[in-house]
Length: 162
Image (tube, rainbow, N blue to C red; front, side, top):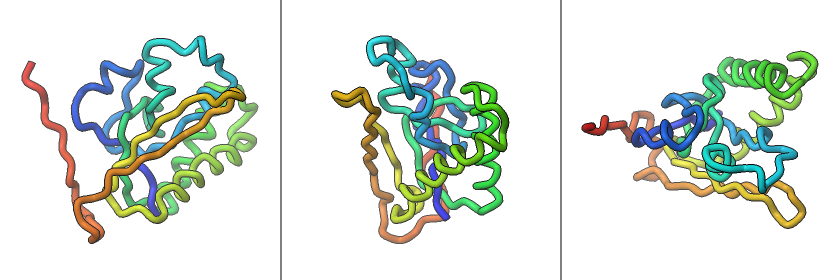
């Protein structure tokens, strides 16, 4: 199956977010982190994370871009377990077993989002609150450079000369 992985084209995520995801972490939308938030209270790096960042499932850092990769059932289970633990540790879920259905739902959303995308397709995210205070997410894609499924890295990070 397919799932999103974080990708970094430069070091900007280190400056834009409180915590940046490492390259090639499995990623989810992460909108749950803003559920019930007051839109006026979102400022600075938190507002930037809300507006356009995916959530890595290893570091729970943020990433501006994600790309489609192949995922095994075992890896999906690890993602779901990590999300469930995160819900317990940061969002007050009583235990991992109780949090697991929500974690599975979060992961299933990404599997469905990626199902028709080519490997290495890049995703961006725009998130905002609607007039009723509900979170709205818009996903955009940058297609892989070929209609052939690519199984090798097509992006790389080049260190800035500082």
